[in-house]
Length: 450
Image (cartoon, rainbow, N blue to C red):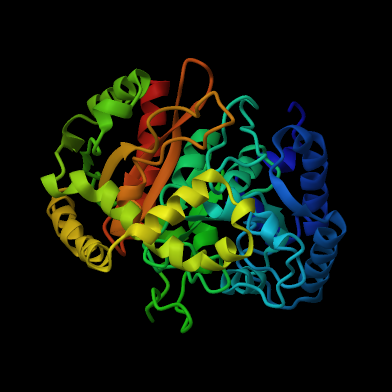
């Protein structure tokens, strides 16, 4: 993966501004993306569906609109990859399973309609693991094809990491945005639960399913997420509320230097690799008085099993149709989860639901003392295996709580693979979290250069 067109190296916010001014034409940029895809896709295999002519047709229409003087959207001319569990009208959406091969939705998911309204170009559908769960996909890690890209939003993370598209959308029920972003070395942003409507997106676990985004920069992630935020009457997780100015706030300087709480998540000592443990020790040391370490309350020790109980029980219900249609075509990973879900007692499921409020009450005590929690995005770099999507143990806790989380590619392992630093914010504080992430990114890079 050698040659990259200069346009593909631009920060996505600067690129947006150039597209809006006409300094760069949408057709010109899409052609650069398509050339890059032709070069690296045989190795990375990030796409489930791609039609260059369709992407160029959208670009030509957007160029004509801008030239006519008509209003343009905040994502004018920017190509976006969509995880193949997100419905797209008249474009195949197979949910990563042969049971849905050839499925072509009649309507766009709500988030796709919002992307189009913002002027984005639907570049194509990125590879999802089977039904957005743990069975590995065909996608490879752009940094080393022998390493997993993570899952389940494997194609979205890899497509951005390989500079095929500047932006992509995925989903997270356990760790399916933050983990692949960490493994592939891009920014992954999982907003507050319910911030982005899920209508028209494969439902695995309504209590946990969250839409997230991928970008090469924090500001890019804030920019695309801002266009997706908003209420949808068909998604009970969303609520009518003003859309936060994610990008403007992310770009602003904090009034005071942020304070961080370093949290060792449950099982940190057991599963984190030595490189990560040492690296996070160095980060907290660099931050000095701006960082304190705090343990999570004892109740968090059971969070992983509680989250899994909810996930599996709801998966057994939502995937019943797949099991009935073709159990023999489902992977062992999916079948094991469905079978576990079928065994969950109603009282245990309902009791698990109650714990979200309990855990967030514990987090409130931490957030009273800090702007963001700093914690690993994954136990280490991407495993050197294509038979796993990696361990989501450091992500599921925050998905369960519904807190916003972002991972920044700040660390590198000795084998040349990226390691993400995850920041977690208070529910609803998405904009503040992105601003804090920018501050940390600049601070640590300044320390490296000093």
